[in-house]
Length: 105
Image (tube, rainbow, N blue to C red; front, top):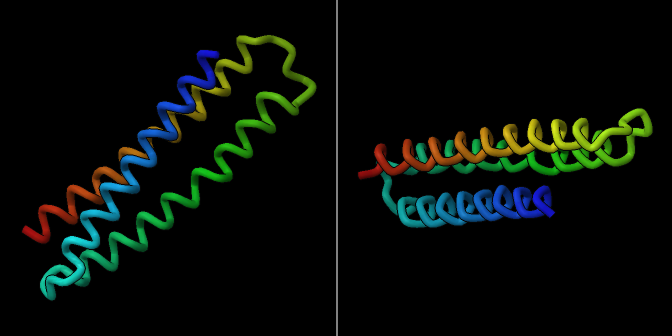
């Protein structure tokens, strides 16, 4: 249950980050000074989002489909490593949003 809850939190944070990025991009896309920054931010955020799907696939394959893993502790370690990677992606997206906001004041 704790694994599901932690992945729900990570997923919720990812959705919030995507939503905030979308709001920031739409707010500044009409500003000519910011158009290059907005375009670059869009591309970077799309690249970051592409990391999540393989991350989840790798997590499920490693934690549940790998027959060599027999202990719960190993599954928990794989889950924590995957969550740390997901949180790093979210941090990168947050930094992109902050860069966009600071460039388009």
